[in-house]
Image 1 (tube, rainbow, N blue to C red):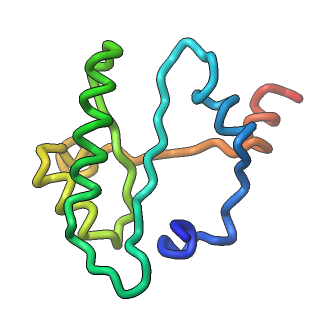
Image 2 (cartoon, one colour):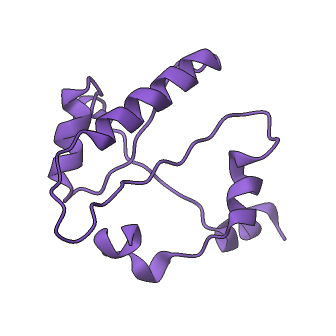
Length: 114
């Protein structure tokens, strides 16, 4: 549902095993993927669920010694950007000019010569 909402259904290529291998298992770093919770059809948005999730993730991250919490949002999702800013997040694209890049598995294999 999230992929459909983000207009990226054609890009869903992940399984539970892949998530575990990429940071949700016994790896020495902490990685957390928190997807937006979309309300059921007919339910209103703006119930504070997203804020509660982000606050809890921040709490757990601090307990585990993390010094940053990074969020990724699509450029058209103004509601999410406004929420993150309202909660105190800094938009690195605006502030520092950062862009987010990703290497897919095939490109990683090419880089690694495999």
